[in-house]
Image (cartoon, rainbow, N blue to C red; front, side):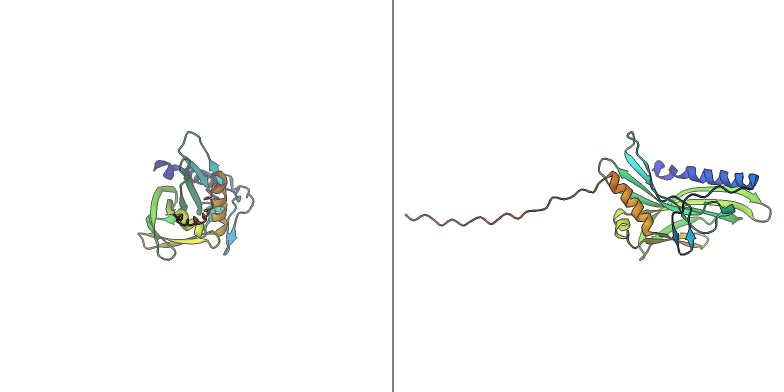
Length: 218
């Protein structure tokens, strides 16, 4: 379970360090090729899935590009969501997680605690990390909450053409809807199926009925 939590935490550390660097230098990092633009939400990620395939590990890991979730402090991609997948190299079974980082300023935590899928389906909520950033006299402290939702493989594949929305609920009463776009799902599934081609069931052939034999005349 530990690898499900830790993989991806490196990105938060980089984001925090980058924010500090921007404050010191006054410069923003260069943007890469755009990944996605939907409903006015834009991300600067490259449209590809990172694959971590270590022959000494049981699971092959797939990390999709991040989708911007609105407010980005100092123009750096911090508030974001992306798909992460783990595939068992022996069985080929896959598990998926919508990984979310929520950054906000203030005096207390929101405490994100549960999640539902569209249609009211209850999904598994995964609390990953909480971290306090820099503090200001007038803005309070920066808070980073990292959490996820487990998405069943069938659900993800069934919504490849339409996308899939989930709603997170916090203990302070706030709610957050995150939509996994068709592009995000397609990229993830294509990367997984390329590494683990789906098994094709052999076509069943119907055998011809046996000819009835007439009893021999005596």
